[in-house]
Image 1: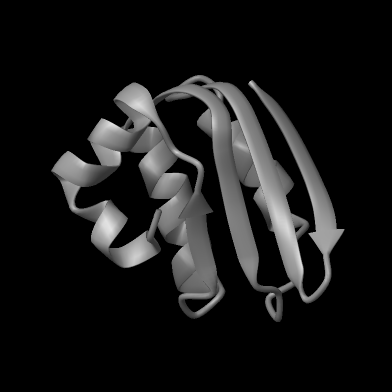
Image 2: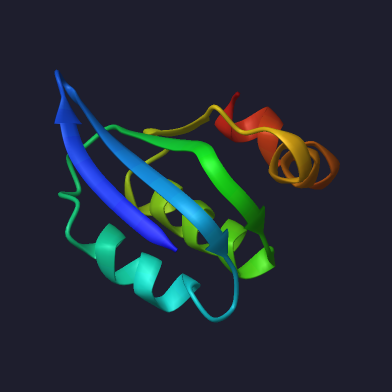
Length: 94
């Protein structure tokens, strides 16, 4: 897993690539902890190959902490299917 966090206007973009699973989610959470509580975040999943329930939990946790100011963008393939089947897509977009 690789994570890059960058400002984009009033938004913060979190670009995550590789696999977001039980092994990598704790590291992902450490990156997310550095995001200020006042931020609005776009999680760019264009290069994410796989996400497990642990990865979804990380994103939902961030969404709760930021009072819903998180959206998922550019999900595709299996990652998108996981979001659609779980119903998370309805909450976080994309």
